[in-house]
Length: 527
Image 1 (cartoon, rainbow, N blue to C red):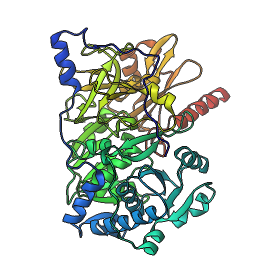
Image 2 (image 1 turned 135 degrees about the vertical axis):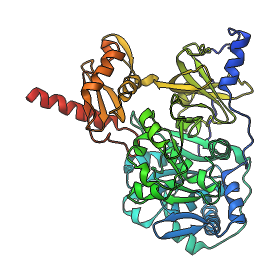
Image 3 (image 1 turned 90 degrees about the vertical axis):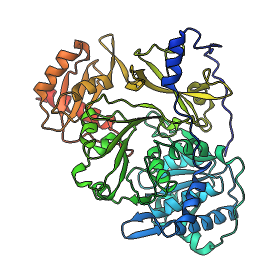
């Protein structure tokens, strides 16, 4: 794997004392609001935590997939055998291993094998990811080994420069349980490399360390109360960072991972914990989830109606954080009747709401959220220019630490919670005015007939919005928009549809919605 360091981005000069402009009271609020609690994770690495449970409860079910059940002892043994196989093939600490397959027990075993030897795993859905994307990932990471299942070999055989291995074949033909070499500085070893969706160009690899992971998965509230006996649904795309929350958050805390097949609802019905995007959660029926204890959503803005609905059935956690801040770095336990926010910083993390000069905004003032602390990942692989744009030395914590530019807009409430106000790259100009698209969507969602809304800008300097369900009261929504927004922020049209299309990572598919919008325009012109 190519090693690289993070360098100071040269175009921005950071103030020597960036909070010198604040009063004593404002300084106290800056630190009290922006700093998560100081908590020591229960283990320094994810696999050590898993191994402790494999030792204490070897016969407990670790993974359930259809009729297949694999115990903690079996996962640990098979992962150790596979780890020995990887070592024999020359894989060592700091190398990367492609895991190109689907949700399965084999995936879980391969993940643990990589972690045990300090190799970074790279998860990609073998059926969904184009071969060109997989080849780009292989080349970018200098990966020499790809682990998969034989049913995917026809497609993966097109990959150049890698050895393709069937996971179960490697386990059954190797069979060695030799002691594994100690991982040097395990906390800072790269645990996995997650590639962004690549919707704006080639995907970029984000390097996530064991320390990053343990900080969110082995502390409260990120561990979501998972313990032995708790069943966690695994429903997300394996290439999505929230899938690591499902898989590793479950197995590092002793729970049972329920791997879904094609039926989301069937798996949700048996789960005690569900982790999902709002778009996916909105497609599930909470009434049939009779064993559910808690839900956590992230990845996109959560509609208030969704939070209110699910909080009637279980504990509802709304959270936020890009891949670069290790799954999430803020979380709110939502209480019905109270404002929906993204909560407060998670343990050992900080959040700063800063202006364009990287100085703190006043409480209640909108700015860009920057993330600091143990959540900040190791930068983009082989992309120092982008790394240096988004990762800057943290002038507030100092001590060589870095903060990350999230591009999320937010502001502090008076009680120290963060309101998410959309993304800076979702701000558009309409008729010369700046409009936040997420803000328009939230206005639509205030109407009781609406469950979820998405707003887009068309090429003709106009906005268009979609909402669900198809039975939404468009007259009422129009009144809500006209009475709440300036004229330039009111969509040219609101279209009610049965479901918002989603991407393979479970987020609203804005490209597909734009196609629908353009088709609607064409049909109107023809008509």
